[in-house]
Image 1: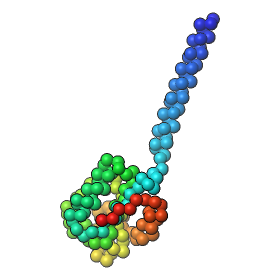
Image 2: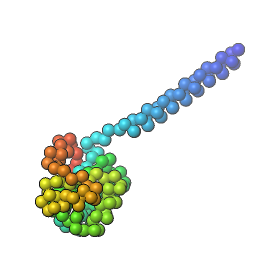
Image 3: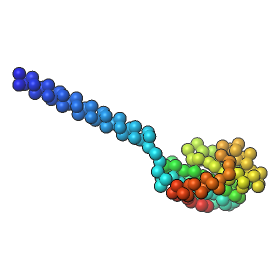
Image 4: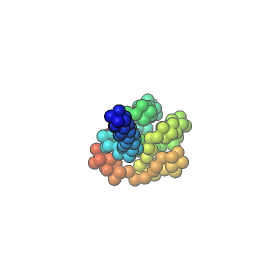
Length: 150
């Protein structure tokens, strides 16, 4: 009888521990799925240079690798000013931009800047979200996102 009670208690203990482990696993996976990305884990890169070497060797290389290797959880590449026109004229940059988009980097461009050079439609066709960015950039700064400019 004593042995029977011990077996029952041991079984209850094992079942309780197993349920606790399973519950903990469920909690951790739901926390991962519902994880809010903190502002300090977000990066906005403002690319305004009309220099192709700066684009390839600095801007594109950095954002691509930063996403690929998980250096930042959320990356936005903002095409601003002269870079908009350069992007519409350079096939190499357009091909690289496809890779950047495919890896999950958000692409945006300032509509006012793109409209000045007639680049808006071309940028939209490349999958860039073209819109007025003054307020949005201000909000990024106020949120505490990291801002990097080239």
